[in-house]
Length: 246
Image (cartoon, rainbow, N blue to C red):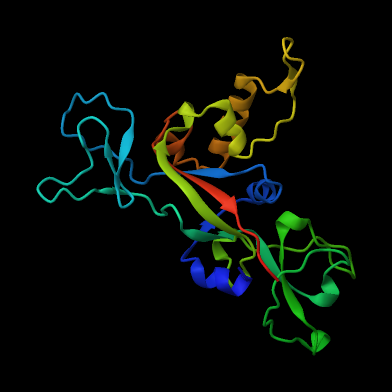
């Protein structure tokens, strides 16, 4: 699909930090966890021991044992994921608009923009650029250029598109080593399996890195409810990176 077609097909954007964008582009990140807000608390039984939810169909979820989070009488679910399987979303990343003369040779350029022309840039083309592709420095004085946060990225600046291939609720502390790696945790610091001679990542090492990353993305006030130790319910979105045709 062309970029224009993907923009038309993508109903919503999804925020990613710069390291996450780099991991997606490198093929290392194929899933993401987003804390459910507010956390699902309702159960029909006060002593319900359930630790998982099941898909009722139609992207609606309920407690696997007592059916909690399903509204009484109507049977309609109160728990619903923001995205469903098959959705196409665009990545919202750290970005900026630059005139062509400000962009170093070889640095990737996104779509053309409509920057208002200053006296120094009359007739000059302008493009979207992204921090994940590397820093940009002012050609005159060498100062590092500033970037705009991903939350303010307009839809028109999108260059990366993902198709949701799986949705499920899960808690951070339940992740396996393979799931942690699919979150984009770099497999550095490898140890060697003495039996097979192949490299492997120790569980504790992977978990510690994921815990540090998870908590670094929360505000201080959110840590008690949504930090790694709080082990909140999250939506897990598995995805595939879509190729953009020219």
